[in-house]
Image 1 (tube, rainbow, N blue to C red):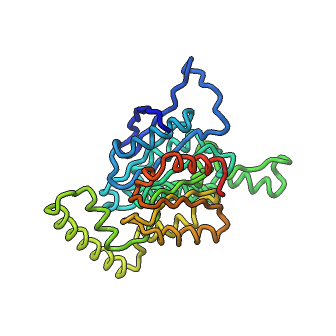
Image 2: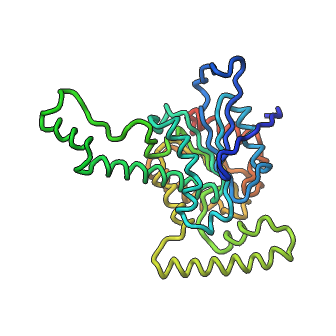
Length: 321
């Protein structure tokens, strides 16, 4: 992929950005979408990644899948310090787009959505978006099944034979959005990893290059990590990172996954990812692994662009071998 292309992203919210495909000819009459390409690529960036950091991925996707819309969801260190409710509220625009365009789409080989996630920062946002979709569906279902709900009453009447023959009551009205992230495939780059003090310090101090800044920042992060661990122990709660690690193994749609990782990653050890893959495989999900030697965290693309993007295209086409 030696060509160069610069793509402009439209800000939907401080965390969410969108780039639509460029149609040749009449923009009011877009051409038919190629069957072999996704309609939407969702990119969950790693914590603290700027547009400059993520530009090479959005530009590469524009070359790889020219007809796809690209949604970029950024991850901020502040998201780890705020409540889950606050983080999920920031992802509402992403849910709104999914609900508007893909409310009737099911996960699997017919889905037009590819999801690409970087590091634990992106994984946390992926978990939050899935949580939003599940919660909305559960609340909607509870409302529909409430005795005072007119849809429930109509369905009960039909069950007793008072309705017209052959009629059914829908579980959810059109346009409410999917109850799961309806992806065709997932790509995980440098993730997920388990929680640890060393990883927390490395992640939160990565932007600091000077030792004068890194040392006090490390002490602060270390103190906050120990305080949070004590809090989770006292309140009998699960660390959010460990919760995410387990959630991504068992709660996503059972569609093919690609894991891109390497033994030289100083932030997410390869053993964390390999253990996660083993758990995913035990559920029957098809998995492909691309292990890059000599590359660092979220920098495996440097180990071979053709290999990297070839694996992404293969997983989209269902090739896991």
